[in-house]
Image (cartoon, rainbow over all chains, first blue to last red; front, side):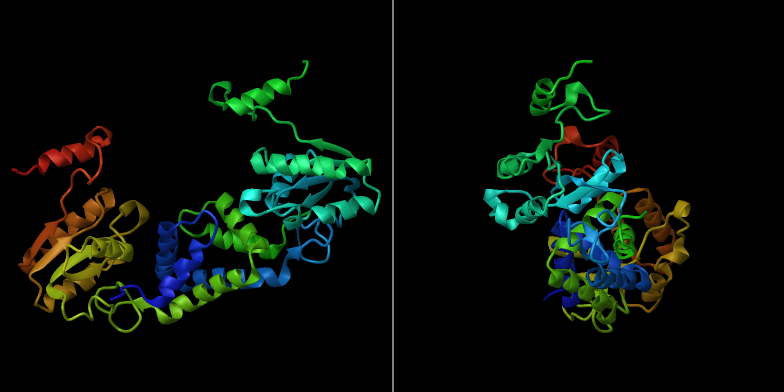
Length: 199
Length: 199
């Protein structure tokens, strides 16, 4: 005999499909929704239902937008000649927080990962090439993650964009600010040595 | 200028109200919902919207139920003379998994915590007393958590139920199965000594 009503099982299954939410967490969130004020559960349901109605990827860079273009592409004070290529939309927010970049973005929506069946065709590489072919771009900064997939994607982009004449660079690797040398992993230390600069 | 559309902010805020979900996780879940298949987001929204329509607390024990009574209270093979008192519905599932208990439950929906403004009147203590006054109950097993709030609740219940003539016991404290003595905290070791049994 099943103790948990189907509606509860169903919600736990849906929570469990979210990234980073395991079966235990999904069950805890579901049981929270059972005892939380009814309005708060309804607000969450409404926010989810509403999300995809009003928000879509930007028609140019694939960052999130409410209209045709996102707030960055639509901003005339951003420099369209400089494109920073990132894996997903959250990376845009992290770079914007740094305040270091005044250009525009291109969100690949993924990284090349043959093991997961993700090749260049599964992410928005062709769309990036089309933006470069349309002209007016002088610099591409590849800001994919410093992991295997991000590196593979960066190398692929460097080769693919070599013929366009556009300067292609990659964000520096090294010790993160506020960290300790003694706690850094070997690869980070190796890259910090390789990228050392005169002071 | 705000880069994130209001619908996205709203969903992140609602996710952030779930227990154990901080602002970073809420943002990650929200951005996942932006790129996930539209149907999966709609299924989660529907499961949330549906939950509180069909599921409510059991009219007797406050565990989850689809009708008037939950699957345990409605089961004639469970012994209604033995009531296990727990803090919340997830505790019922954990005890059911052990297969050790054939009685029925009483879900307090919380524990006494003066710091959080939760006294006996804020949890379902009166409802428990009413069940005992209705007669037919011979044993109450208090299975509140082995933490400050759970202990305070257990002591309060022991005093409050003393006059009913019902046997009140508390789940044993000690070393968890499969653990190591060397990693156990002092209080657990102290309780394991206090509760030692002849072998």
